[in-house]
Image (cartoon, rainbow over all chains, first blue to last red; front, top):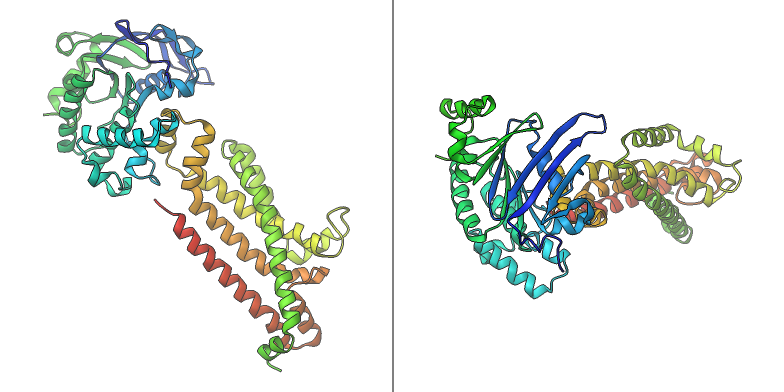
Length: 261
Length: 210
């Protein structure tokens, strides 16, 4: 099946155009966001709790719908696309992995291909390929249930599931946030290798500055639903913006995450 | 005559009463499920209405069964003397545990799981049937278990309005002031309740795949 995200030819994969998201009560969680994500880059959304990072992410796969403004994927406004089709073309990884506990690892990873009606043999082969890709030998893990996996293994399965239908865009919401520091560092390293190899457009939410600097090609900083600025890791450390300063200061005090070394 | 001798002596009638009893319970549970499951699912996303409906069902539950049977007799269509009135009353009792456990079971499914299901592009129907209901199944079945055991017990009272069942022996024993005849109704009813409950309990364990 052809997904609406198939035709990402231009350099810009995804762009927010003056996007605002309001709660029914009128409170704006995201205000006039203008942001462009280039094809193949890893854009980090960095901010404190409640800054609107996750909301921004959910606007992309229409788990939330923007109140004002547009979001374009490959030049097409996403509000013109069927949300179900749109989501099947976008990989989604969340903090607790969100694996289906009543399904085996194999069935979890094969979810989107099955929804898209792939033949069984092709799904099987693809699941095996994906599990190997994320460092889980299929013969050992395919038949297991999520309850029999460690936190790091669950997250690997979550990534494999998100990649299974080969979506051009990947959304990751603090995927490594609940892991112990050592496992997290391992997964971050593998993430970098994977991102370089697969050339996906990745939007990655984190509140961990070290993680942002380590993984991002660019870092978009959000504060109270507003975009403070977008920086490369190099620029990020040099800027004089107060909110960025607060983040950079937390780096030195060690308060922000015991993540990547 | 001891209660077991009574059962043996009257085995034809006993068999007939057991069938009647099971019929009452099966019919009531079928109605309660047909109503409680869809309404329970529908109420999951309607918190305010859900409180009301469960409140009303709670109140229904507090009406003594003998009184409820009595109230229903003069009601046109569903009322009167006989099995159909009893089935209506029993269904009303069985709906609460089914409805409530359907709501709770679905609401207690890990929100991260439901969110990732939606985020992966499952339709609301697929999320319900492939994710929410299978994961709610153990809680849901616990409600069915409670409702069934309760129905089997309350169905004995249905004999008071001519609905038959094992309660016939209990009321006969009361009239005769004969404990053995009462036991001849009560013990098989308790036996059925225990057997059905453990059967459902086994089933409940087998669907719990978490």
